[in-house]
Length: 352
Ligand code: TTP
Ligand code: MG
Picture 1 (tube, rainbow, N blue to C red):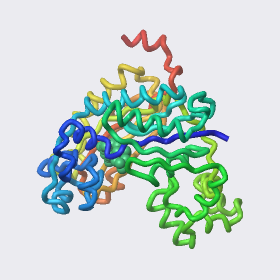
Picture 2: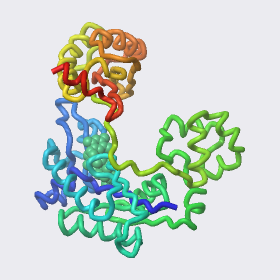
Picture 3: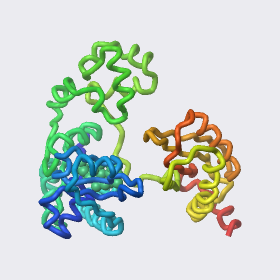
């Protein structure tokens, strides 16, 4: 049985800004791109959330919901530096830290000698250190695995701690809506509901084989989660699997030629970025990301060995078929990288 802590900072970018300028604590505050530049909200403080403002919402909509909203452009360098200091606090307790983003991580403290081995006490100490040393609040979840620790953390947000002890797992999971399981998106949850499956206890009524038969890979995952099981390890050094560049367009574009014109500007940037890590002939695949005017998005990806810029043209064509005539608001490119350690050093040297 593992002891996992999941930590997630509360309204992270906004919290950093409120620490820098405490007057902002009293007003609805959001970090994001300007409305007249088709920006979106990165995050907002809890005052703004009471108006319905949310991450990823177009700023123009946020302004409608919350006219007094104070909007800041954000200071990524400051958030990154703060994130590094948070990571340093985690490292006092365990080497097994898996960051999920700048403000969120799993810690495996199963073998940590601190706090007499109590994960709960360690989580409290970490939260206290973040508060006293960085002037920020974090929420934490403690549980026997990653999946439950993440859900536990959400349960007491903001500035809270929630513990799921091994003997409490079954009660916690039984009444959990299936849509709350990480990996089950809104669409999948709706598909499950159409089959009369709302809660984990509903899915438990189906024989495991049937769950797997009906839902394939997803069913295999579900068969574990509905009983509170997740044996995925905390992965301390996550290897980077892809590199991408993208751009939100100043105005929507409709046709292939206009999209291609944008991509020809992005391609050199992409090549510059991946070129520092991996030679062209070792790229594992390439893809193109499209976001439509209705905010739906799709990625057309093709796995193969070696990189070819003209291939993006074929992928674009496929993507636009999927668009079914909808205008495009964002275009992006991505390449798949080989596993770390598998980049052939010789050809790297030859490329220089
Ligand atoms: P989250 O942890 O998802 O959100 P949060 O920390 O702002 O709020 P909560 O209290 O609910 O945890 O994301 C962390 C940071 O990542 C967030 O402060 C800003 C950034 N972010 C974006 O830029 N765009 C997004 O769509 C999301 C979800 C987050
Ligand atoms: Mg957060």
